[in-house]
Amino acid sequence: MFTELNNYDWAESFGYAGESGACEYALPEQPMFVEGVVSLAPITREDVEEIKHISLGENDERSWLIVGQVKDGRWFYLEAGCDYTGWDCQASGRCFVTESYEDLIRWAIGKSERERLGIELSELTNNNSVV
View 1 (cartoon, one colour):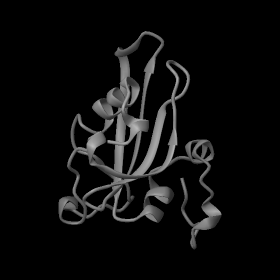
View 2 (spheres, one colour):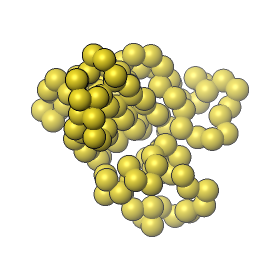
View 3 (cartoon, rainbow, N blue to C red):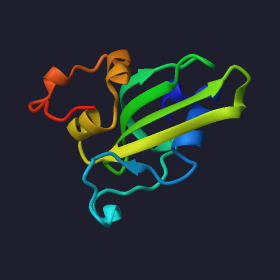
View 4 (cartoon, rainbow, N blue to C red):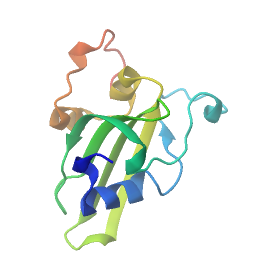
C-alpha cells in the first residue's frame, strides 16, 4: 500500500467509495453489459498500482480525491467526504472506472475537481463533450 493512503481518512474514503460496492462506469454511453468491457469490482487501497493525482480533503469542506490505476489495469477516480463530525454520520463517496486515463479525465471528473487536482483538459487530444 502507498504510504500516502495508509491513514484513517483514506481508509474511510476507500471504505465509502471504493470497497462499499461496485464502481460506476464513467462513460456516458454505457454498454448493456458493462462488466464485459471493464470490471466494476470494488477497489481497495491495496489494489492501487499508481497514483496519478491526489488531493486531501477536510471535514465539512472538501472531499478527498484520487486518480490512479489499479493492478488489473483499470483507471479509477474516487471521491469521498464527511461532515464536521467525521466519517460515521454524514459521509459518502463514489468511484468511477474506465479503460483509459483520457476517458476517466473527460467523463468522470468535474471541472472544479480537475482544477483542484491540477489536470488540464488541453493535454487531451479531443475536448468535446466535457463535464
